[in-house]
Length: 519
Ligand code: NAD
Image (cartoon, rainbow, N blue to C red; front, side, top):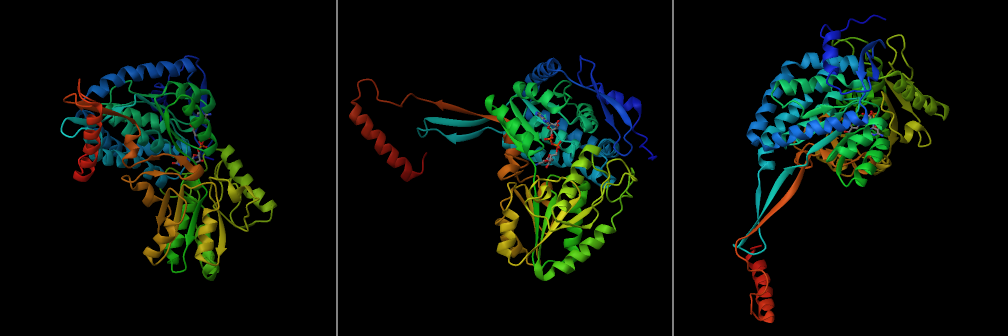
């Protein structure tokens, strides 16, 4: 089928973007336009030696970068913020062409790095300033908490939000004085490559932000072995591999992993709001958002009413392969992924679940399209009952009591996101607190938590280790240095001093310090 490709996507532009990727082997990967399956560009693949060289280059640039005063470093990000917004359309073109998502989601994704930059431009000066703490001997000693950059941060990013995960997580790392080596997914390397070119246009030193490309198991080991910290976003299975290797190397890592996210609708919820929220929560980004909703728990008393409205709204959604704002639902990222999503639906049906609506691939629209799908009767012996489907597939369940709904929501190894809907916000928030999940949205499905850049966002249980955003979203990229000063040598007995007397005075000093609150 023919789809009018955006005018910005020219061969010359794409060649310029991928020229940044080191590859001495000459090996390439065919990066395709998702809507058509046509090859867009041959993406160079990096060898272990290429990756090691990328680290050497980044390290040389990082030494100079870390020496620059923070205010000077931050000026680069102020300019980058403007450039990213001014070039949002081109970025969205690249995101769409490589991921197949619809226009609305592509444009919304371009907003993420500017939001993260805005937050840390305000917060970084406070977080990175040396903090004076009391020393052990009042008045005669001080201890200062100093934040040193870790060095080079290895970032491994998935395909579902390639620009956001590739660029946003690097912003606080760079502000803190680090360099970055990024490994995007092969399928979606173009938009992060473009983001880096915008950062360099804004004044980021050349060489500081490197990109290496290849299949995960080929690139991962060398990347992790050379990095001082690893920021990983992807599946729980891969997260385990990354965490193990980082642990062996005694470096820290942040793991942002998968979810099987529940939505609980309380009896007093507004049905219009619930349906709108569920449409985005279940089918936004074609169901490929780590925080998206795969399980909906409805009160038995309102099940039929809410189900009927949700099904009707789902059936009214428009699917399409187009670079304008027309289609409400875009493609899945690849035919392989479409097959995985389809296998979850087929497995559920074979084991007794019912397809209420959707349930089929749509090759008539594009190679990787799949219908928004609502299932009933999903049980834990089905793939879709426990595993993350990561597609536009949601299962409906009824509950009799709120306690039962909470227990069902928590009956999962994951804990990334949850959503609770109710007319009484206080009551809904009380229910939300009982869910074992790193993010809980009240009367929204996911965006409110993710867009709150001041609060750490991460997963509980098997959904992750650590968090992005908030103070720890920057501090994790730093080492703490405790710079302690003793102005006069008073610790220990003085020469000739009776040790018993010294001990008595020391112990009474300890008592006095507690009473006077001097540390
Ligand atoms: P994935 O784990 O297969 O791949 C993620 C990245 O890791 C890719 O760049 C891949 O090439 C790389 N990789 C794969 N194996 C590797 C290895 N052995 N060593 C090093 N790197 C390796 O995940 P995916 O299918 O690309 O992405 C979808 C998953 O990501 C879903 O589970 C989704 O929930 C999750 N996700 C989580 C968040 C979050 O913030 N928690 C955000 C987006 C996506």
